[in-house]
Length: 565
Ligand code: GLY
Image (cartoon, rainbow, N blue to C red; front, side):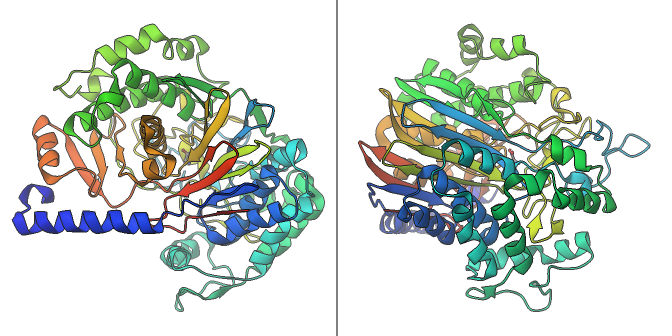
């Protein structure tokens, strides 16, 4: 492997680049403090939309709704109307709520819908175009949040997004995403949205006008979620999807509901961590991860040592092996097994089976099958206000621009790929087939999205989350674990990330996380180490007394931004 043959000059370069990177991080980290409200999101214009709600006297929910729809206009690669997500909300009275607006399979969906007549998977059928689309949950989710806790009008919350759809300046990051995906959009749609031209690529600063999107947003602003799920618009979406090979009906839209769920509560070293329960694998995964970490006194292991990477990978392997065997839509799982895999007795035995030196072969933890992690797209945002209302939302289209199927300004998700669609085959995150997560009509596909709020002595101290598909759980674990060691949210976010997930049997590390010597040592232990440029794009808010300090991946690739009043 490349890192095995660094010479002295390269090592010096590695050291100097590392030093430079730390300086850049320090300069870029904002550490600004706000007392009225704060926002952290994946695009500065979406942050501005949230801040505008605070200026108008809105609360953290109003800001979150404004951020969400603004992301659909300026961060179309993952921001969405026709996607879904999860919200974890801390209310001023101290309670924490969890809202599930995950997509559902159409009622005509079947477990074999992505297989040909020989039982073989049809290439990219669960990833491209109408067959890959789940019934979107975003509009129902946003409306539910707003109806429950919002204070300025729904129309006002959507206004910034409407203005942004009418025109805004492209960032380099988004110009590149449009250019990189235009060809696939053409293949899937047969034509491109009128603002996109294959032969005249976008550049930074170009003015993007999305007239159809502005009209769709206006209709949602005026008619609320009814127009999206019950009216002519729903009928037209279903007919469009059907004409493109989907199994969607008007009834599927009418049947869609966002659901309040009991959040997953994890006690870790005196902190209460609230995150998303099933259909996210994040809640149970983080519970298992943090409990094993506590049992192994992982907080005493020096970060970014060989021992740290090894223990981290061993815990992750166990979390992902159980994910494959037991987790899925709450209606499909065996509740007795779900209780068992979270019990102290079980986690003690799992932690005790971790050896200091030996790597556990994956097939000792379950059946073997491997895949490759391909895509990391989704987005996270947080809002908070001085009343103690804090919102942590992870939302997704799944792939870049989802299914890339474009309709009336929106891209439809390709969330059906988060189901296990073909026995013996992995999905785009390399997650292996799982019977409990197979396609069932009306069910929600298993997710990794883990919007989280951390509470200490009854007071919220942080909200956080990240995109990254299957890497979300390992990375939320890392940030929480480092933060609770006392690193502060921003510096925990700034640290390099590691990832492992049982299958594929790789230890994935962000470039620079471990020195060449440590990488060599891990290789000698038997790890198949892969260095990659970037894992995740965190957004969060740290809360100290009544002060809100937004944090974000300012130095990683992306458009992350923060602001407030
Ligand atoms: N679509 C990625 C996830 O939900 O985990």
